[in-house]
Amino acid sequence: MRRLPFLVFAALSLALASSAAAQTGRITGTIKDADGKAIKGAIVRAANDASAAKVTSTTDDKGRFAMIGLRSGEWKITIEAPNFLTLQGQAAVSAGVAPVLALVMLRDLGPIPGALSKTIGDEITAAETLSKAGRYDEAIAAYQAIQSKNSKLTSVSLLLAALYREKAQQEKDSTARQALLGRAITAYSDVLKSDETNTRARIELGMTQMAAGNADAAAKTFQDVITANPKGSAAVEAAAHLQEIRK
Image (tube, rainbow, N blue to C red):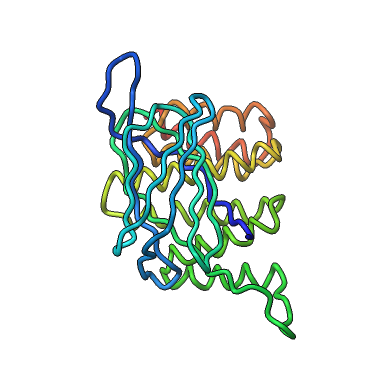
């Protein structure tokens, strides 16, 4: 079965009810298809390597799932449903309020005899069209599909991160907004892991950290841009943002 990775849930802070010795939390969310229809019976599996713990949940008729009693730490998540591409990723369970994850699964159409495969450019254009139409979940799923086949394309990660930020701006719920900003931060960070010299990703990372209310992290990010090339145009932009933080 083909597998479609989803981005790490960097901002997945989860509600805890625990002792100081063993904090626990929960993961909740909804799973729908690209048309916004709930997927019933999807299997959600969570595994923690540190404790060898495994938890499984199944979505109800509204696509909802919940897993409780998870120890704090990194959990590997796998989501499977018949006729859909498998989603894989990680969730960081920690203290805080858990947002409701809104995940989108793409249908596994299988090989189409006689069909001409789309170019990456065509796929990106289609994803951008969905984004401009405000169909954010579908656009995100489309970009993730491109990533699954072209993991080294940093341009796709940048587009996906920008889409998370755009959706966050439209989100009225503060918890959901913070979760989206967290996913954008993770996407920018992933770009920088493979390309430390990507100044645009670093500046966008700093701006997203600002939007998320993490002034200290944003200040460090902008300072890194200035230190790397004090006379460059990016340094001027970073200095302007740094000044805004210090007001």
